[in-house]
Image 1: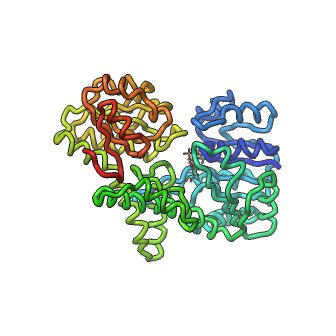
Image 2 (image 1 turned 90 degrees about the vertical axis):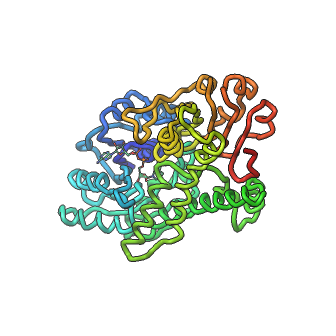
Image 3 (image 1 turned 135 degrees about the vertical axis):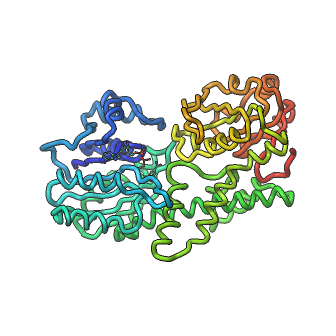
Length: 431
Ligand code: NAD
């Protein structure tokens, strides 16, 4: 099949490459010239395991093409919209990129083509797209919603072997087109109407975010009553009705999806006069959780004026260079506003945009260099590279012994043997 993918970010690029790998002819279209230039040279604009190899493979097979404009006289069976849907002022999804793509596609798609959203869009967007197309005189295009569930860090695998495919369609021919597109994937398929598909995406992210905030609340109580949240999580997760995933206490969720999608769903509920009390609390708990290291540091130092704090991990999770809504950035901003001198270290992120700073902060790739003469360290992102440091060397490098493990991945006894003091989340506090 011939497929156009509009938007070549984490979702659009990986989707386009995977469809090319499945044998389709794919055009990846993005307005960002630098991205397209780099991709045309085979250079991935994002860090994602296996992406360089996949680009090389499908490019050498002539299966993928990168362009800043819509290709003329090229056949197309389906166009996927994978542009950003960032949060607006009240948390609502900003659909300007989506409708810009719709308007452009309306000028280029032949009659009968399927136009499907991969972007996460509010319930009712497919209907709005259909109305927009009618205004533009394009009632001859099919509209569908095919939400994306990939996770950064395992995006290629998730795209090629998804846990489920959701086809939000209104006609048998749209369903048929989607089935042919995905025919190389052996995943369960749920066929529903577009509004239901749009809701499945938000409900899934909101539920996962709820699990995270829930276990973080349990962790905070564990600290106060002398229980161990790591074991509580294991004990809960062994119940198949609960399951072990997303039950690890820590600094909460970040990234480009959970924070914006939870706020967007609260907003969607508000537009139909429904107060989504539970999800509002999930968002609030997550925001508060990010600040736990700050309060622990304030307890240890009393004042943070001039205190050198090294933050380990800037990406919102390991395996990606994405720093959108990363807890590390929020924490850095708050530490700086308390007078601390913050150093950042991450294996792949090179610079960090921290609120209140007029230019991006540098991010070191050398953890030992970043710890030299530091008064304290906070592990925010559980990269493997941070798990097994030479702790005696770390102790000798640092000016002070205080560590906060925001992901509960470090062994307190090992650090204590090296003369460090470790504080973490949801265990009896040692500091
Ligand atoms: P992104 O910001 O990385 O990429 C969006 C791309 O779209 C950018 O390269 C931008 O230049 C391009 N773009 C914007 N408007 C355009 C236009 N009119 N024409 C051509 N190109 C245009 O975003 P992303 O992380 O890939 O997310 C895309 C969507 O998928 C969002 O709605 C997001 O919520 C959803 N999603 C993301 C993930 C994820 O893990 N990143 C997972 C599932 C769903």
